[in-house]
Structures are given as C-alpha cells and as structure tokens.
Length: 408
Image (cartoon, rainbow, N blue to C red; front, side, top):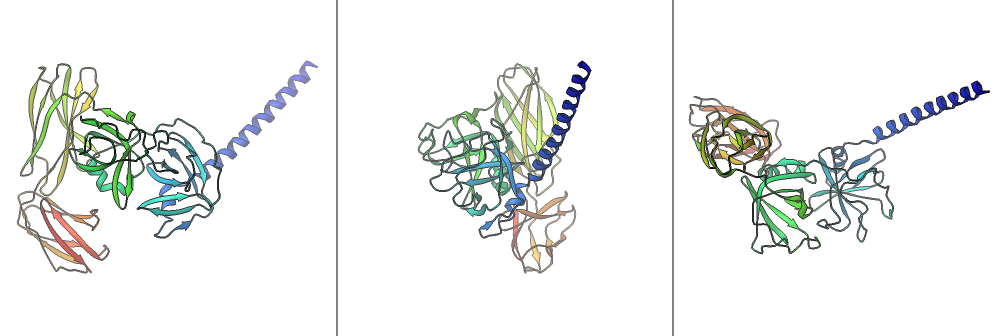
C-alpha cells in the first residue's frame, strides 16, 4: 500500500512538473511576442493621426510622478529601452499608473498622434479600465547628459530619465513657477514647473545642484521637468573651486583650483567629443595640501572641432566627484567658400591651408550633423559630396567659420 501511494505521489508530481514547464513556456512565448520596440510604434505616426493595428504592445516603466503632480492632467509618461512616450488617457480621466509601475498594454485600436510636437498614445474612446501594473517600485537609472547634449538630441532622449550634473536655476521670481532657466557649463534649457505641482511657488535653490528629471517637447523646443524636490541633489562634495579651459590654437589649456583636498588621491582629466562619452587623458597626483592650483594641456585636438572637458577627483577610499563640464571650440584658420553654390551634387570647399587637419561639419536646417569631411593639413580645397542629401539649405562649419550651401 505504501509503495502504491508513493508511485501515485510521484506520478502526480511528474504531471504537475510537465504542466508547470508547459505553462511557463506559454507565458515566455506570450511575453516575448508582446515586446514591441517603442521606436517601431512611434514610427507609425507619419504626420497625421493614426490607429494602431493589432500586434503592437507597449511594455515599459512609468516615469511620470502623479503624487507631486508636475505632469499634465491625465498624462502618463512611459519609458521603454531608452525611448519615451506620452499616454493621454483623456480629458477628465484620472491617473491610472504612478512612477515605478511596470506596465504592459495591448495597443490594438489605440490612437497615435502628436500634441505640441510630442508623440502621444490615446486609448480607444470609452475605455475606462486598464490592466494593473506587472510590478511596482521599478527604478529607472537616468542617463547622464549635459544641457548642450540635451538641446541637440532631445528628439531621441525626450521623455526618458536624465541626470544633469552641476547646474543652477536662474529666475526673476526666485520660485518654482512656469518657466525658469536651468544652466550648466554647456548651455541653458527651460526648467518647467506646472501650476498644479506640489512644490509650485517654493523657493529656488541658490546653489549648483544635480537635477534628475526628463526632457519634454513643447512646440518643437525642449524643456526639462523635475518630478519632485527629492530629485534635486546637492552636487557631490566637490573640491574644485574654479575650472576653466582655453583654446590656444588647437591646444586646450586647462586650469583649476581646489579646496579641501586633504583626502584626495589623484585628479583625472577626462575629455569627450560628443558631450556624453568621456575618456581619460591622464591623472595628476594630489599635492596633499588643503588648497592647490593645477594646469594641464591637451594638444591632441584638430582645428574646427569641439571638445568637452571635466575633472574627476578621486579620494583615498576610491570615491570620486566630478567638476563642471567645460566646452571649448578650436577655431580653424580657414575662411570657407564653396563653388558651385547652389549645387545638385558635389561642391568644392576652398579655405586657407592649415598646419593641422580640420573637420568641416554639414548641418541640416534643424542643427543636426548630417555629414562631415576632413580638411587635410596643407590643402586648400576639398570636394564635398551632397548628392545623398535632401534638397534644402545646409550650413557647413569648421571652427568659427560657417557658410550656407543650397542643395538643389
């Protein structure tokens, strides 16, 4: 009898195991089939409102904070794999989700449009219930950006979590209200506070801070929204009193002074060509005194380029803090001309010969770099091929020299 019971139990366990494996496979297959790249969804909008067909699913994390209310009524912002989008639940609707909710939505029949320049999803008319969050309390790690990078790439990173280091708010009112200015060493952007935000009319911080939030788009211009006071942080305990970078031809002269350097091990000098990806140029050992001054030169630049520099103070325990970011342009000693202009294909750039290579960048009317060409040292002309570009007006720049070229 005991043997029969054991066999029966084993048979039941085996059946349960098979069932578990089978249902798990179904869930995995279902969830993997539901994953749709948000960029693919957004690409369905081609200038006019559209209805999303079956087979499109949104899986992402809510990053808008409805508790502190610095978000428009009935709007929810969702980030998925580095891309963000607005969900508008309709006039008079409440907020169905809050920050940190991981959600999965079948978008069949949903609307996709653009409102004030921003992509927006809307549920089918009459929809009043939505699936509960798959998980709550999900933390999205913000991408570290400079304001210059944000202003030039906001179409790609809008409505995603961002971190701006060492910025300060300037305002004539002195309080959070409407449009204030947020400025770091690279540029300025509007810091927007909605009228219903819980902290509206609160006094602005007077110090340089770190800001966590997301970029929004308002009528084709970027703005930056914080979600709450808790996402304004004191900048890491810096030991940098002053930091400046000056271009001497194609050489960058960095100079800085420090305070409270007693526990500092070394200072790393970092450089970026795009304002986002940095590489170390080397380190300088700490002088070990409370206050010091330093200089460093970087002669690796090319005429007509732009570089970003920052300092990294590393203490004896391995902790570190960054300085502000300094942006510097290395002017090309070239006066640009182009012939023919207008052109339907190739135009010839003419310039004064330089002893170092230079870069000429081609920018579209919205400021995006669409092409670049190397101006080799000792040359005075270079062919620039525009045949693959759309018709329009383009700006060619190298250093502080620019020229407009019409593409037929």
